[in-house]
Structures are given as C-alpha cells and as structure tokens.
Image (tube, rainbow, N blue to C red):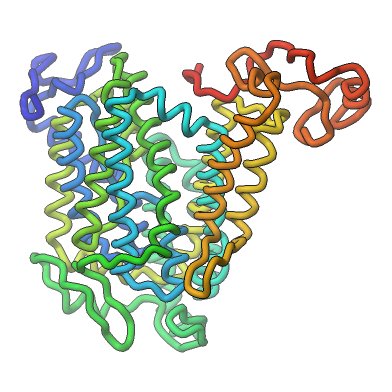
Length: 508
C-alpha cells in the first residue's frame, strides 16, 4: 500500500550490504532526516529552472511537492522518485518568449505536453515497456536531447551573459570547479552552490564598484542598475500563497495564473516530451538496478505520474516536472529507497512554497549569475545526448543512424524554419525533432536488409562507405581501409559481428 511501510533494522541505519526497500522505512526521525536530504538535493535545480523560464519559483516548488505525491500514489509506492522542475523545456520556453509569448502561453504549451506524456504512459502500461525502445531507440533519444540542450546556446549569449559578463565568468568558473573538485553530494549540487556564489559576488561588486551599466533583457538597451535589488523581498510575506501574475512597471511578475493555448507554441514544446520519456525510463532502470526489482511493469505508471504531475503544476502556473537524478544519488549513497522519505520531502517542498519571501530572494537572482550557470547547464544537457549514444554504443558507421540524426540536429540547433502560412511555421527544436524521429524510422524502413540487420545487438555496419565519417581503421580515418572496403564489399555481404548496436543494454 502507498502509505504502509515495514520498519526494518530496528529503525536504525541498515548494516553494510543491506538496503531499505521502497515498502520499508527506518524510524520516523531518521526518515524525516533522509527526506530533508532529498529536499536539499533537488532544491537548487527546482528553483533555478523556473527562474530561467520566467516562472514563479514558489509556485514551482510547491507543485513539485504535489506532483511527487501524485507520482508515488500512481506507481503504488514501487518507484521511489522526486519530481523536480525539468530542464528539458527551457529551450522551448525561451523560444516562446522570444516570439512574444507570456507565462500563460508557456504553461499552456507545457500543460498539453503533460497530457501527451500521460497518454504515452497509459499506452506503454498496456503495450509494454519495449514499445519505448522501439519507437525511441537510443540513437533518436540522444539526438533529441542533444539538440534541446545546444539550442539554448543563443539564450546564454543573447540574454543572460551580456547582463554582467564578469559575474557570469566568475560564476561559470566556480560551477566548473565545484562540480569537479567537490566530493559526493556537494558535487551533485554544484549548480545550487554556484547560484549562492554568484549571488554573493554580485553583492560584493555592488558594494565595491556600485551600480552596473549593462544590457537589459526587457528592452534590449543599456541601463544603470544594481546587480541585486531586494525591493520585492522586503515587501514579500513570510507565510502565504504566491500572488497571481501581474504587470509591474511594464514587466511581468509571474505567479499563479491560468494557461492559454497556442498551436505554434505547443509545437515548440511537444518535442521535450521525448526527453521526459528518456529521463523517466532511465530513472526506472536505475532504481531497478539498485533495488534488484523488475520495474518494467511500472514504467507506464511512471510516465503517467510524471505527465499528470506536469499537467497539474502547469494548470496553476507551475513548471514542468521530471524525475531527478540528484535524488537517485542520495538513494545510492544512503542505501535507503523508502518512499516514506519522499513523502516527507514532498511535504517540506510544499511548505517552502508557502514562503513568498524566500521565493522573492530567488527571483532577485542577477542576470549575470544566471549567465554563468546556464552556460554550463545548457552544455551539460546537450552532452547528455552524447552520453546516451556512448552508453548504448550507437554505431554511427551505419547511415541509418548517421544521416537523419545529423540533419535533425543541425535543423534544430541552427533554427531552420519551415514556413507554411504567414501565421504558422515549424522550426528549431520542433522541426529538428520531426526530422530526427520521422527521418530515422523512414530510412530504417526503406534501407537494405544488411543495414537494418547491423542495428541488432552483436552486429555492426562496416561497408566502408565514405559517408560513415566516424569510422577509423588500421589505416586511419577514411584511409586505405575505406578503399579496400569499397573494392571488396558488395551490398549482399553481411556485416561482421561486433558489440556496437542501437538498442539499450544494461551498463556494466
């Protein structure tokens, strides 16, 4: 049952080699302490991403708690997880705002994506988890995640970094150093620590150098202003619900609001659903590996829970949700997978959402600080796509993998547009995703049998064609080995066995 846990090990820390399973718990004081660790682990990103997307961080963290409780109920307590704010939507949200959309347009598009993810979850629950791997193999998933991350590069260069380049540079450097040099848990919250560092540096710069003359993202002009303004912090209440969205001085101040819907904006956001499917699938697989449970029957429920969590959060002006790798790290470190700790974390998050003053402090984060954080963060999102390829040994010697993915990534990152009418066009992430997914399955269905065979586990593609730019042989990249291959191999010759493949396998 969702609210029933067996107390194990006398309620004390599990002995070496033992774990606390999802349906078990330690004593309540220890469980509350573990819940607090989960809050700290997800806290930084769950607050930073709404700020980057222009949404209210108090609303976001409040509904992250609500979404987590919904998720745990839907999976019947079998999949321990915290649903924090997803980074996968940041690029699409930036595109919406660049086209004049406001927060209502943003949350409307996200709400539709949440419903789509929930529908995928229902379908996967009845069709089986293998469906996800067939429709979205690692080659496709990695490409979509990559173009989502790298599509954000112009946001850093055009909006955040110019606001205070020196604070941005120092913050970026601090994040890089902390992520690499700090150990364990502290390394996992390097983004949050970078936020604090940048905040302090901005305060010091205000004291030492005074106001800054810098680019203002509101009107694109240079203005003179303090790096940190706590005017809104001073007037915010300690306890209460966040205010509704309002316009102050011609600028939108986000809060609770109802969504509005635009087809053009929805198409920008929908590709992010693929990233959420990949994140949830990876989370379920990781937890299954750690707990030694077969959680494939719960993958559909996990997708449904995340989709409904995103839907409910965005209906009130909150941010999209996803399962958090930071919290997997806490579970791995403590060997405690009890869902009781996640209920505690969710309740604490809801209480944080009821402190408007704290949210005002986060909203006052200087643009230069966000510039330093996002230049690292967006690059990491993009490289997660490459990580998916590497872990699943995607073979780019095979044109089925190489060509449609190459086209989709460049279309997405380069902002290629397909204009159908004066009022409707598809481009950027949306077009890149369409090219990647449709192109991959199209060429796979039309390709020669030996190319399709090479996608199976234990096989590889090796016909020596020049377009396989990633190949290297004993004669070097595209050297004599290619010439020999061109002369000596016909289309009817099957490929030699190798372990590179295009289907997911457990990590060693």
